[in-house]
Image 1 (cartoon, rainbow, N blue to C red):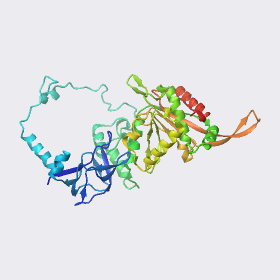
Image 2: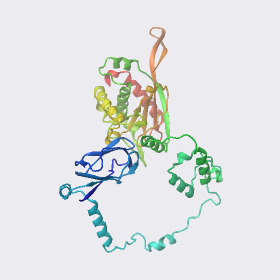
Image 3: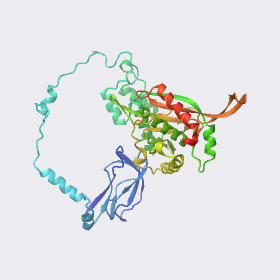
Image 4: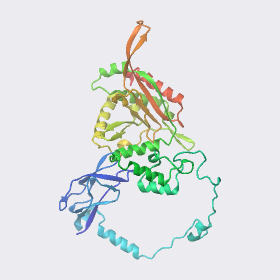
Length: 411
């Protein structure tokens, strides 16, 4: 009977691999077309692998807990000729026949159309580039891992290490350069230390933060009074979270000044075409950022329902790629952990992230009653790409958000 593979599908534009969480089929069992047979975990969510056609499971090659790249064969199905004709799926047998036919075809000689020399001699004719500073492999006085030799780079690639991963290694090479020997000595030193495996979610967060930190980021903050917002919230049913009041005020302020959320490409600042804003959600082993669409046009009641559904999907790891892409900025309420200050980091594709700290009750002098009265304040902080936004612009953005929060009935 013809054989059809169960392949690891392309689960998103930026997803190259996934980890097997659960296998829901057994060898010898029957499956239907489009049946979810394997559950996998990507960097952002859990998803299902489905079958292309109906058949009988001949072999399962995947193992739970293992990670496989896109295109890997996870199992094999035995199918009927009628099913192949009906669905048009490619079988292993037909794919093998195509490879044999391609191998038997006369080989076409590729011509190098870009250079008037043979491929074999082109490399030899290239001019030799002389170093501009002789005798110094790195600038004098530089310390640490600012320069990485090709040999060191190759060893890091073998180990799957990034530059940030070797920041703790003390270099003994020229001008403090970290050598392969330094790296090996460091790895031997920490070999017996306790360690744990980083989850796909943790690795995704780490990768995003590495890329974010390639930009000049700055943070400013100011206190905002929450008494009127809390009073308004207490009268609502259901009650919107403070995060949603801040989210709504943030969207209105950005809609008034779209350039604040623009991003720099070459010599252009590209402005947002929609005010889709993400909300950071803490999950078991990291943070995910589902995106709420057109926040500037939604009411608080609409945001409350949409946000509740999105958080539920996030915590069940059921977010799709569309749920997490396309945001222009993020709101994070780190005050839920009792934190009164913080420096949130924006995602690599965003210029801004707005953080809300925990509310604190403080005595404040009132001229009206000529006495100290209690007020509730929280710090609002915004971290921004300093290439696009200056401190003054970020301060005015926070002032406008604070102003909007004083009239919560208009949000």
